[in-house]
Image 1 (cartoon, rainbow, N blue to C red):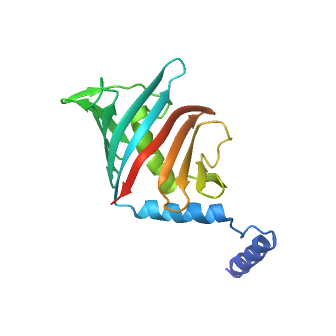
Image 2: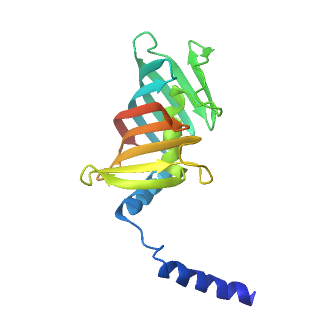
Length: 193
């Protein structure tokens, strides 16, 4: 027990001596935004989504509402799919139109699809493992990269979200699978509450 008590202060001194306790402005802002997203009980957004399946690229617009872990999405464009709705509860999602479920096709082994972009980006903002963050566009935009803490950069699923540094509103997001951007998202509107 005595060894354990001595170990903690020694590790603290070693880390402080190495400069590992210094936190950059971008890291502080990323942690503040994460705290805000963790406290969000509800939010809504209007989004433009581009989904790249390799040989096919689809563009959608949707309205999204999140209440806790429950997310509902309604496609608003293109007109041919306007009105389709998707609902997520936790990690499970379905796409419906007049009570009929539709499969959109998976973009990775975990079932990522264009309609899951908003829930995936929300989850990254709340609890994704931050691999890098930086201030961009003369300090007006914060870029936050998330990925697998044990993974290799460029492999598996990685996300990037750009936030307005003043309002903390998400501006854009992207999801990459094995280094290839499969989903790009632009937030047209975002509101909390």
